[in-house]
Image (cartoon, rainbow, N blue to C red; front, top):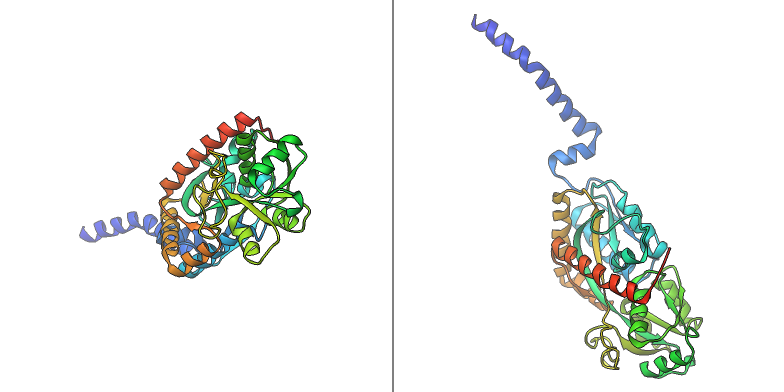
Length: 339
């Protein structure tokens, strides 16, 4: 009787044992993603870090520093993939549609917030289609002019622009980018109009400016600082920071020269597609804060004129909400419409 009961119990357990064995075999042999989900391992393959701007710009520069440090810390390659276009909406849209497994990430600039009010048909929303990971660094812009323009101060530039509306051209990283919006805010606060000449990224815009093809630019300090240190014959008039920059102590802020409410601090940040697990987000956020505290990484980022920030995913989410609100007001006030 006892043997019969034991045999019956084993028969009842066989289907369950068979399923468990199959699942273990599949996970370990044929489906690394499933295995990783069970073991908690991340990443299981190279991670694509999409930068929605052209190479050599400030966002790209910092992205490559971060990618290198992530690769060293997590044992998989983090590969920067530049996807410029559409005022950063092209590359950003690609990430929003990527599988939420942590192997495709977005290295975003401030344009992820400015695009919301600018593009009514934007195929994604930064607060709905992404999960924040963390803030990397914060920067500002330098208002530069060519000496051939014949102005030596912000006031002289304003007077010239008022006398000749839309006559003065300026180079931007593309319509809808934060460089474009920084100039729009400046023009709104000074009552002038200049003509935007958009490029596919900050680096191409700066090249055109340094080559004498464009008379004015609001350039991220990370991009223009090496040229200013190298003796480029261009004229810095002001910075968009809330106080003078240690790297350019002789250059006044816009507030100092009579243009209030024109502070523009651009942040770079990491985001993942909506649905990415909290475990992956936590891993990436923890490593980000660790690498930003490293003296070597901190100094590398600081040498490009950026201040490392770090913080929690919640900090980044709150920042995005406030920036979307701020630029929505500017877009409505100026009446900017992009398709």
